[in-house]
Amino acid sequence: MTTKIHLLADALGRPLRFLLSGGQVHESRAAAAMLDGVNADAVLADKAYDSNAIRATVKAAGMKAVIPSNRARKKIIRHDKALYRERNRIERCFNKLKHFRRLATRYDRRACHYLAFVCLAGTMLWMR
Image 1 (cartoon, helix red, strand yellow):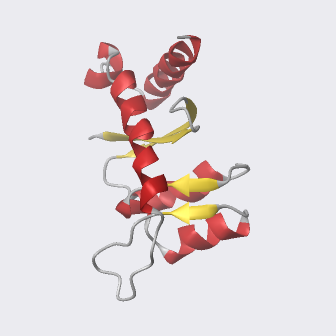
Image 2 (cartoon, helix red, strand yellow):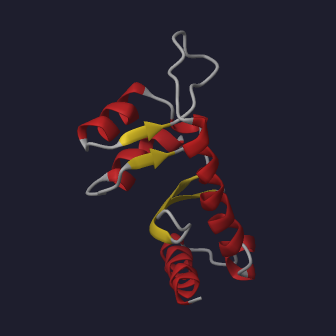
């Protein structure tokens, strides 16, 4: 069984929130929980988060959805390409987290222990 880490990061690429799910769980199921109570100008996400429900959640919170449309979408929704380039900060945050060997190889058998180390690694990133 695999584990998927869902991450919410700030504009500087620092982790704010983590959520673990099974590897087979789609990203859109975790999006509502990750965005609950968030106050930001925009939400940058990849194509996996392209759904009407996520876009409605983002819009209801008063944020701008910068999510490229999935190929399967019949009506393409435009996004701000210049702002979307800033999404690489999230990918760099994941890369920094994977520098922690214990996190990258998933030595912990229990999800609660793994999540605790993910939070510890995130705290260490904030201290840099």
